[in-house]
Length: 230
Image 1: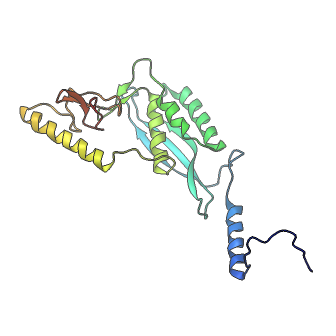
Image 2 (image 1 turned 60 degrees about the vertical axis):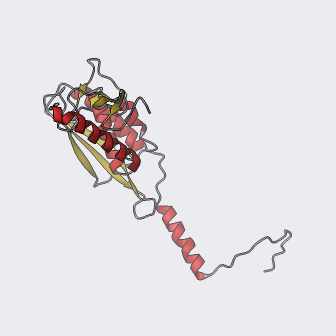
Image 3 (image 1 turned 135 degrees about the horizontal axis):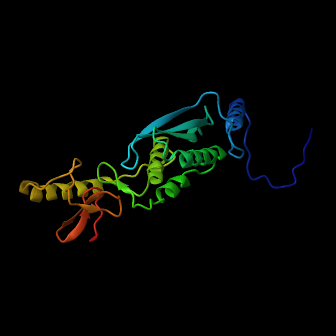
């Protein structure tokens, strides 16, 4: 069959067995990719992680379980995403709202899309009583915010969120500041916390840890390096 070409030819490509095989492979991979639209169905088998949380506002520990589903398994786009969350505890004081919260969060997980917004929403909830300090001196504004921190940790573990951290220069600066402070004050018998921060340290507004002290006339955090003097 003869085909007449009316337009100017600007390029061409030869089709061989290798290119056909690659095209077939790409088509097969694309057929396996799941596009999030409708809520996901629960697989027969699912894996996850359980986190133990002990807070000063609850008599018993909370056990937070987040189960994941593997998306696009066997393709370059394979990844894990949260599918459901459960919270269990012997303490029944918060049972009603915790059940409601986990059901709503699980529904959001199953709907798909970007679920990382839940972290900031949960962490921004403040307790009317003023919150509490965790071991290590970190301030937590509420029990809901503590749950948000666990979700954040899990999303970092499965690669949906980037783990925060200091770069090499910042780590070196913080190490130098801590060494300088300890050299000046440790000899005087100043009491330190188990994390190596002064007992009288102030709360850092950046990392929410009681590790900010005055050095050379400037408030400096010995945990994250935040300084009022830049």
